[in-house]
Length: 464
Image 1 (spheres, rainbow, N blue to C red):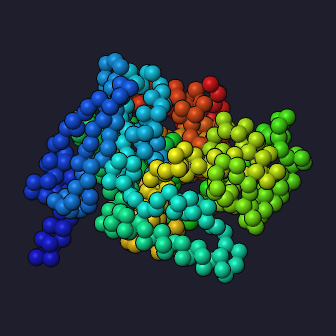
Image 2: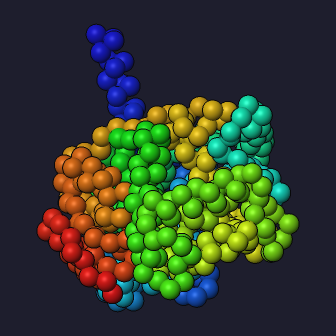
Image 3: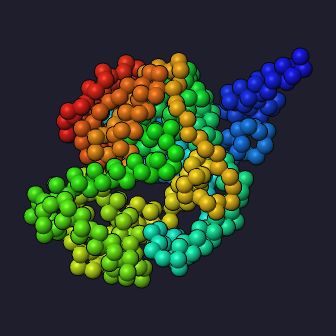
């Protein structure tokens, strides 16, 4: 009998922790708070939200989540919460940089809210390396060819782990994962005064949204997951999917390039172009390319990152053509600029904390992949997401998405009990605010009315 009572007690404790009601004094404070919004320029308002560092121990250490919102221009339905991806991207900075990320119709009916997830930007940020260390981190050889290079990579991994432990503290590193961030999102929903969450997430934001949906399926009003990750995949499986996705995107870029007068490839076949790119990478591996901007070396890793950064959007293909033309002549400056943009390096040489936050979050969510020397143990969080009892959840997949291949969107939509797959037949990473007028119409109507689009409604999407 006592064993049954203990089991029931343990279950109730877990449920209370999940809903944010555990703890005699702390949980009501978290769920009852109202952010103190203040003007922060450009029509935006900013605030912070208190959450427990460890949601299983709500009476312990607190951290603050940084929020930004653009108030609705008309009759308000509620708030729509955005996550731009990453992991590690600052939602505060990205919304401030582009207030038109949502249509005028959505901005009329919703307060547009974004945030820096825990560990990111201004929300208890992960801190590791200074400028010189970050430069070295991004230039390091990730594909060692011999014992010496493998040993160097191992020592670098250990040094990085020590730096992050010293700069951030193990307690923070242990709790920056998506499991905790999804619980923060529910505290945020409550603080915004919404009985149910309206959410739009891109890329990693789909992973966060899917985890929220599985924890709180009946607290969703409407949810759009654009450029989906597959929650069932391990880190290694996701890396393999991404490699295939970037190859598909590279082939699309090359086929387009062959039609252009400034295409830097002499032979217009995929095989010949692939060989020339391999030769470029091997050249940079042997000796870094020139850089006329500063004293940094354009290594093989920098070349790879610069190419990858430009494949995220077809709008960047023209820059990739010019950057490769320079690189084939030994000048890696343009590829370095592309890599700097991807890596979050500012013009003054300082870095956003995006790369380190991405690493820290990944090491908690998928510890089997990038983190052999990480100072804390992660938790494998790979499971099917069903979200029983949720309203329709719209999953958007782009057929030639390099970073989140279309197959992952199909998988996520199939897992969800009420998933609806919206297909964008196009190039680039994600679809909403990415050139598909069909996707934007369907998503806008769904977020405003709650009525999901027909499956496959944008399979032959038109470009704006």
